Amino acid sequence: MRRMSSTPATTATSQRKGLILLALCLAALIINIDVTIVNVALPSLVRELGATTTNLQWVVDAYTLVFAALILAAGSLGDRVGRKGLLLAGLGVFGLGSLAGSLADTPNQLIAARAVAEARSSAAKSTLVTGLPAVSTRPDRD
Image (tube, rainbow, N blue to C red; front, side):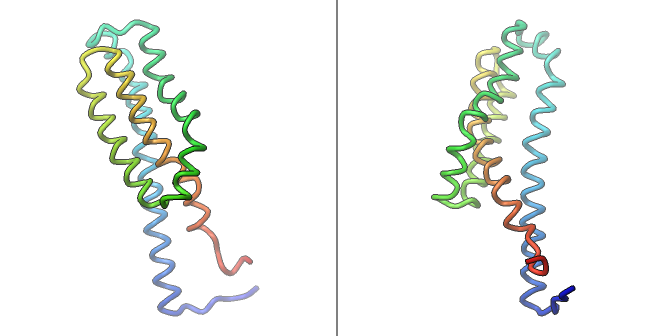
């Protein structure tokens, strides 16, 4: 078993990787909490917006449909423009889409806002998938 010496550069790199991992985990948490909130809010959507069963299905499925359609393109875009920028832009627009969804007055507005939020969320999720292996490699296990 090989043992790595702990130099200041190695310690700084380890701390940086830890912060990157924390940021990626927080981004994943935010995105997944949004999905949970929408599922819990479905009965309220019927009362507040007069949503039909079909509307409720689209509220949930628009998110998944857009994610499936854009995840590969978002991964490719992340390779071209940079993962950090794509993650930040994705989370920013995701937040704006979620805000628009919370202000929606009709089920169709909510569905559109969820689709926009997921379009950018897929960019953030593609960064999560490619970013985790980059920060979790261990040099002592080559």
